Amino acid sequence: MEKCEITLYEFIRNGNTLETNKIIDTLHKIFELHRIGFIHRDLHPKNLMLKSNDWYLIDYNVAHCPTSSDAVSLMQSVGWKEYTDPVVYKEGLHKASIKTEIYSIGKLINFILTGSPQNNKHFLSEISKKCTHKNQNERYNSVYEIIRDINLKN
Image 1 (cartoon, rainbow, N blue to C red):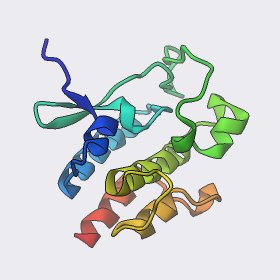
Image 2 (image 1 turned 135 degrees about the horizontal axis):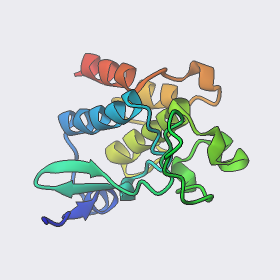
Image 3 (image 1 turned 90 degrees about the vertical axis):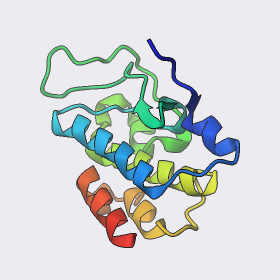
């Protein structure tokens, strides 16, 4: 089995940049998870690993499939606070949804483009701000919408 090379966190911290098409490729993987009913619930740069020039989402310990009685939900703790929707952080994993994952995606976009999940001063700032809007109803409804808007920016 081929080993993963580096986390996204280490990749960015080492001064590397991620091309927009790689961001979109990674978002497509998250979209496919959502399409089949899974919510990862722990999206952050240490849970994305590089292998053979492709990014993979890892650590499904708190993943959840609301339509399945076999849902993976082994932990009760919430992931990395900077990337977790405050609603989930305050009220628990049972509040996780596609909208809370979209919050995490906004923070990931910030990190990828600036090295900080809080810094939204970059060319995708409108997108990351919409992802992390305090009102979940003002956020994107799906990862596909984020992909569409990123493609429009290119």
